[in-house]
Length: 254
Image (cartoon, rainbow, N blue to C red; front, top):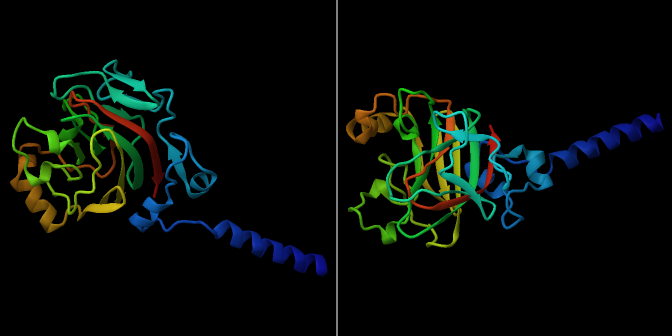
């Protein structure tokens, strides 16, 4: 009997220990806080592993990624300083890369560092098909841009850093300047989407809401019939011909 009671007590204690540190997956800010900051790049802590985070980039290989509408990884991208970055120049849309897997409900965290007048983004819910030339034709974009040094044209508020491109302008501008690492965090659960930049919520919206449909059908995306159509898709890093570094790419399925 004593052994039985001791076994039950140990089981209860183990359950308590295992439950400690578990994160609320319905809270985007809690998930952002769950990602360990300032550890060795492209690694997971034991806590992150327990909570379900996985690495999408190991810092040394391109495993898990390929060129959009390609079977291989494009040579206009390279690994530099344990980061994924572009080797093209000219500020025009070039070959984007996408994950090998599709994702529906997820949180993704990554760090990016900008160069002067760069333009890029993280695009999600992407459909891969030769009927499309670029991922942005189907997927929403978390905008990355060095607006402080941008001279090509006047930027609309929905084009600046942290925006949901051509839809929702950022509610704040917590981006760090050229040469410093920014932490981008994206939460997608059903129709609920939250974008966090350096710990600050910059965009929050409900897909397929009346507001979302009005914006989608009255702006740039009215010319793209399949934009925002897919609830599951690939995640893309955009190559706009200007250099941006990406590292610490971590994803949690929700």
